[in-house]
Length: 72
Image (cartoon, rainbow, N blue to C red):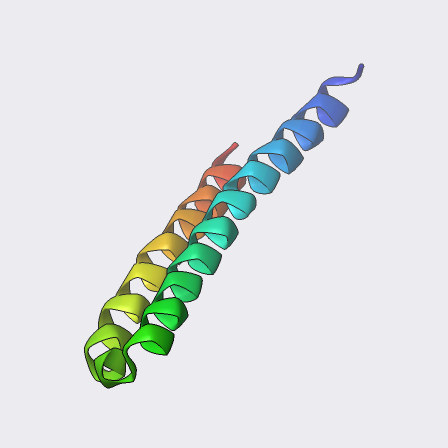
């Protein structure tokens, strides 16, 4: 295999893994927040900001992965 092809495949693999994990984490965060709000509707105001912060931190992992791919 040519070095350019191997480098491209490595980048694709890193981006694939780096995007699947945050997507799964954000899905779980929002799912559990909606489940909690469904059980206790009064908690919506208290859960919204922590849910957004958790989603933002999970999304930051994908951005770090993108930066790593560009540095390879």
